[in-house]
Image 1 (cartoon, rainbow over the protein chains, first blue to last red):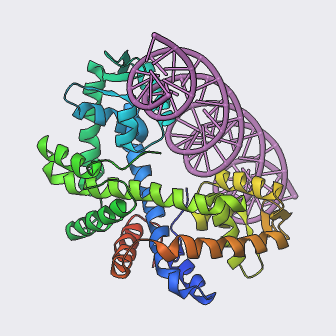
Image 2 (cartoon, each protein chain N blue to C red; image 1 turned 30 degrees about the horizontal axis):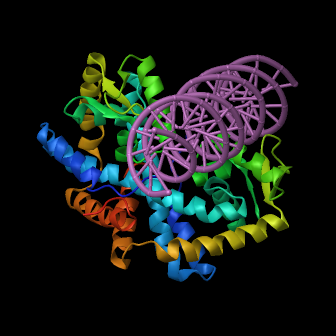
Image 3 (cartoon, rainbow over the protein chains, first blue to last red; image 1 turned 45 degrees about the horizontal axis):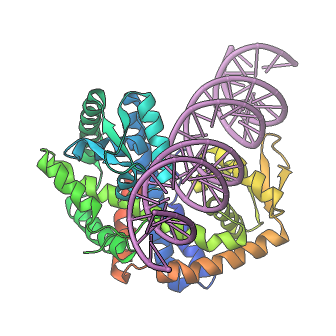
Length: 168
Length: 168
DNA sequence: TCCAAACCCTTGGATGTCCTAGTATATTGC
DNA sequence: GCAATATACTAGGACATCCAAGGGTTTGGA
């Protein structure tokens, strides 16, 4: 989408903030902006690896989640909570995965309000192959040094907990 | 969108990865997933602060970029490069900002292909107010410890450089 | 018992992102 | 000088996310 810039645009923004009298929040601004940009880069890599499988990241996440459920099935509201996305996003993803024959919807045995999402055989197979691809092509070459990975997990873990993502 | 989960879903995913024989990439997977989730949380906070101004983050970023340009104007392709988004995304944002009277399009004086985006007076004022709000309500209370901010800037800065975002 | 409140999923609408083309203008090379 | 190539912006389409609203199901208190 573009060639490398001559200079780091986020460092420039940080200098601009300082120059305009916001020196006290320039560093957190830069850190947050860097997180946004890093997410964008990582998402693009992930989507690139998943494209040959006909998957997007949103659909892959759902598939992977189901593949780790003992029964291979989960209620939609559970999936929504675990993936931390809006219920309508799950509806959307399930629609497409179902069209692709990777999951099926089935009624909950005891609660008429709830719909279960269940992996099909093809869905389970594809999840396995896509996971292997992501592991070798993205996570296995993340570009983060080992100790930086630990730092990220620690810093972002604490942040997410403070943000109310999970108790414990 | 949901209540806090009893346990950290990313830590769970990491354990799942290890249990299924991907222990060597489980940590980077967890770090990357944490970045995705953190971005989601931060974006929601930012959008919440900008909503009263009638702005989204995408539009705010463009407005802020223009407000730091000496002349208050930038070619669209420059904005696309600096914000590191697709040109069509800039077109989209400019359409809406122009409808809101915050920017105007004007022809480039010497290059007939190029369109300049220029801040209006209202645009400049709104950018200033929105920046103040973000600084006090988001960046000023990011929830990251000062030394963690430094770590993030360092780790993510190196990552972005290796990813080809900028030279230097 | 039974009705109101709570919960679950889906539809429809607004935004944003990217990709692929298409149109217009500049630049380059012969 | 002119054709071929490159660059800039925009239109249309595919996806994803969220919010608001609606219809069906359960639950809980009067």
